[in-house]
Length: 491
Image 1: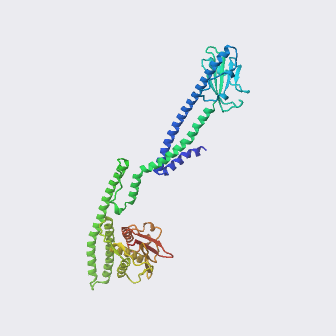
Image 2: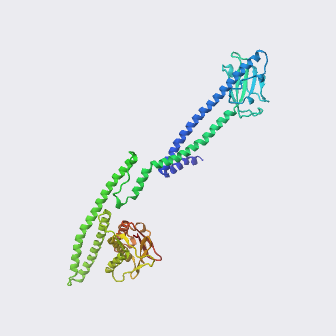
Image 3: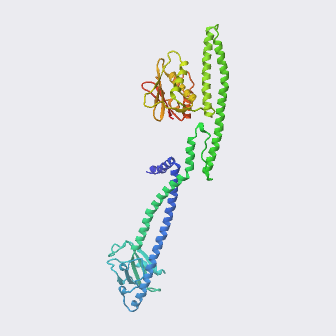
């Protein structure tokens, strides 16, 4: 039991940690407001109840004074009849005179006269007399055990014991007044607190949640803007609040950080672009030298085979440097984009034609098909060279991973809003290990390491697709193969 109780704060702490800041701020605000409201209302409640009780006792005391003024004449004449007392009825009292019991008692406690039916009930007297003997003017006592009092209209009565003489009093007046009105007032105030405080706390939580949301709008705007800032749009900045507060300082600090990141990123991209460009020149010269040497007819076979292998590797190096140069220039925004209204089928045919010039025997066959539909050939806004590069890489990637003498199917589909190009092969498909990083640079499946390539082709495809605000997706086919889908909006 003790261990379970100890775990409760831990549970609350864990739950509090997983709440968002707005909810935590609202709960903290509601907690502080609730504690202050409850404390304030309890103090006010105690003060108001004490004031009501004092007013009740003061009214009861004044009532006894009126009784004493009327009964002194009777005592002087040797008569004892409190029922014949004629009191002023215009006074407003916090108790009902019709249900008030009045007793006249002597020092020994004997009831000399009474007004109202007491039945077998005897109000306490001895303890009250002892207090008066110590010098108290009057005594008050709240009686709760009044079940035996006939026709009692309240759960409790207030008893006042009032001596008629100042020195060594012989006669005492006792008045039992029902606390009906006082109990009703206390109950009403208690109900107001029981209903009002939870309602006030609930309203404060709703208002606190709303106001905290309004106060956190600058943070929300910063979050949304930060999420939209990509590597190719590092020039964008988070909005700065006009109010001079902590949120403004946060936005300014983040913008300063973005300035540093942009400068560093641009510096790296320019370095890659410049380095790639500088590397192309010696490689192009080396390729030309190898091609010239291979044209000599007197070359021995072993040397020819060696130089042919070197030419192949040089071509691979030129290809990867060109890809790196293209990526670097696209990232840095240095590549000149020439957007125009074009037909996709023309670009696809050019890419296929370029690949066929480099094809070898037993390579997969490329089948291009325009799916028959009701739409005429729409145009798209794109850079022809970049789109050709995109389709070239997709088809080359399909040829690379397809078995010999298989087929690569290219489908062009038009609908009212988009043009869709599907490139499907009969290769092994995309493994689960490579799927999450398929479009990242230099990402290659370990099982495909024996094939030529450096993992830049699909990264370029993704980059060009993003530049055209289009989408590129893939999925594995059954029983074998993989299909890439490029989707671009029509004009």
